Length: 85
Image 1 (tube, helix red, strand yellow):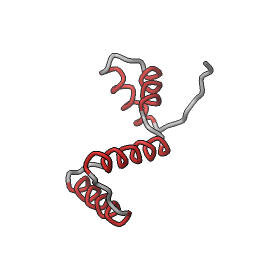
Image 2 (image 1 turned 60 degrees about the vertical axis):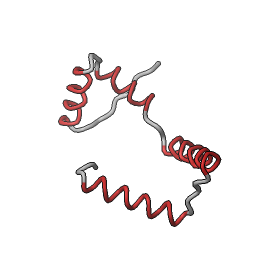
Image 3 (image 1 turned 120 degrees about the horizontal axis):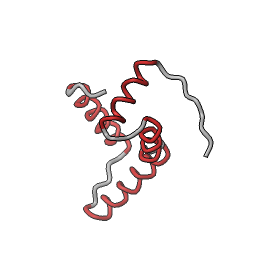
Image 4 (image 1 turned 90 degrees about the vertical axis):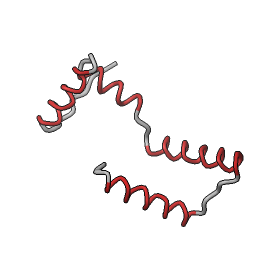
């Protein structure tokens, strides 16, 4: 496997390195693990669709696009209120 260089602010590097160290990992290992576990936008959309299908089949829950938008707005509001980015 070939390596690449990524330029990030020193503060971001230091924060990631501290997090990796606290988990007993090298920064390289931590970033590799992170890349393997994060979902791409396409993977998130696919998972969301599978979840919608499962909920519809399980209990008939099938929100419309406008209901989904309202639910997303409410979730965003609550996350902001809780101080989550």
